[in-house]
Image (tube, rainbow over all chains, first blue to last red; front, side):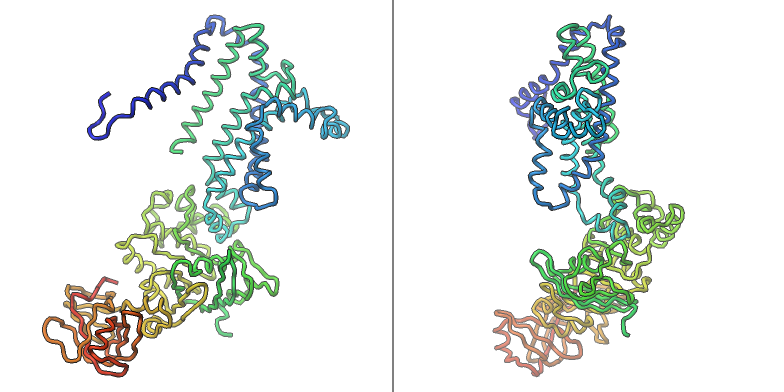
Amino acid sequence: MKPARGTGGPPVLLIILGISGLAVFALPLAGLLARTPWAKLGSLLTGDVVTDALGLSLLTSLAATAIAAIIGVPLAWLLARVDFPGRTIARGLVTLPLVLPPVVGGAALLFAFGRRGLFGQPLNEATGLLLPFSVWGVILANTFVAAPFLVITVEGALRNLDQRYEGAAATLGASRWTLLRRVTLPMIGPSLVAGLVLTWARALGEFGATITFAGNLQGRTQTLPLAVFVALESDRDAAIALSLVMVGVSLTVLVALRERWWKGF
Amino acid sequence: MEGLLGLNADFSARREGFRLDLKLSIPPGRTVALLGPNGAGKTTAVNVLSGLLAIDQGRIELVGAVLDDPGAGVFVPPEARRVGVVFQDYLLFSHLSVEENVAFGLRSRGMSKESSRTRAGEWLERMGLLDLARRKPGQLSGGQAQRVALARALVTEPDLLLLDEPLSALDVSTRVQLRRGLAEHLEQFTGPRLLITHDPTEAFLLADEIHVIENGTITQAGSADDIRLRPRTHYVADLAGSNLFLASAHNRAVDVHGHRLQIADDFEGDVLVTIRPSAISLHQHRPEGSPRNAWLTTIELIEHLGERVRLRTGPPLPLTVEITESAVVELSLSEGKEVWVAIKATEIGVEPE
């Protein structure tokens, strides 16, 4: 590599460390691809375990993302805009699932929403609904672990947004809802999309909280990561096939969104 | 009742340790400038009048209706006021096209998509923006953005027009040209207009009446000549000290209030003339040699500002002059004394109005 005159190339040490960094991300994927039983792949992917897990994973991760959007955006707005007592504590609570081991999160969910849980018992008595070991349990676990990505991204965007634009919209006759819908949300649009994608990706990969709170029942609560974990012990080829499905789905969505939404972002 | 159809405001508003006291009456068709340095409370005034900030005391009335009166428990929120605002930096919505920006106020007030588009289109045409209707604000020049902001504010036919530093986002060369366009657009708005500015030239040229604001209070109000010739604070004196005149130019000479001054370059038509107070010299006898502008006048006022002394001279062309303390002693100047004024043609600043 010949550096352009007068600029000097990038420092050699940086190049070596940077390439090592890339290797951390690339090598595991290479290992996975190297062990893939390509000939059997077709029959492996159409097996019951894989299709059940894929369907359930897509359903629960999208549901969790939708719930995160519905409750997470208002929460982000409150955290960014309303100076209520205990706001710092609330912000800490939202961040907690990001650093908490997911297994602990799952255990906490069990104590709160389990059959004998603080809220689970009255909920069960009143409605007959049982969250643990159900699809709802998977969705709740996914939401608990993944929604903080949306809340934090959107809150940051709202705090950086120049509020004078909302004032300008108000002087033009826009009600609070109109200015939220036509000014605030479109102006933080890229951050909102980024938050949704991160949330969805995190929910899709959720393992610890799900297995603790919702269990591992094929067709009901066994999502793709859980199926991979089980298959690793019994059927290695199936585990690889499941892993490839996850890589494929995640990569497709991330690349598609990057092209459409993240340009110049 | 006088001013019933215009704006009547007399209030005080507090904000983060800052207090603004303002008393303002603007009849329809009249432009008042709020002229003051940064931090004087000008933007707070915009926020109060547009309803983005509530007052603590007093009363604001527009077209006879009360907008804000804490005593009577009345507060009309911004979306229910009929106040058009051209904000500092314009604040155009970057995700909407020019047309959608202009139609925003109409849509927000419940007009159908179809009719709001038609109305927005009429205003775009009037402002010469029709070709830019589909552009995003990011693709506009400063002058175009200003006209979009003006169209957006006026399309809803407000009862009051507020302009917060409408020219400060522009570079100097386009400012002169756009000031003229702005003056024409202001003329077409028949309601009361309030211009917020830190630029005395803008205030003198665009407003019928100037209110000088310093540290949250009005320190002086009056016509451009009142402010210029009878400054009451140092800030006003510094502003007015620039000797600013509207004049007509012809053949290397300008006519200022019937008084003829020789200038260095050829100009034709309406111009803005500025003379720095320190560029004017005073003499006991008729000066010989180069200065081509010289006349006999009297000293009307002497003001000592430390090392410098500021004087105001009388007819035929009242000027603010700044000389040193020692020159005052040397010429033994005093109020009422006759003196010769001399200005070199090259020291007279002329720009097309």
